[in-house]
Image (cartoon, rainbow, N blue to C red; front, side, top):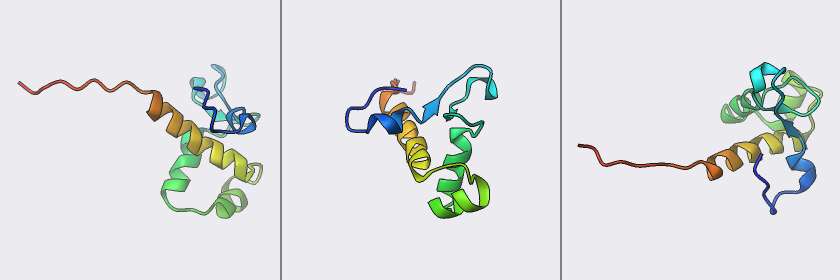
Length: 86
């Protein structure tokens, strides 16, 4: 993850990438819960409380926030190369 000084370090440490877990896809640290699965629930407007209660009871609200921040960091760090259509 890209270090972001505006985000508390404990939130940045909540996401990890390990080659042996979900083929190296980012997951909530200490779990096998992929970041993308949490983000899909957020996209569907499932509340943080519902995510914890109905899907992932081991998550904390800070874990969900860390997933969102991870996505922001990835997009922010991404280089976009635009080319003119011929």
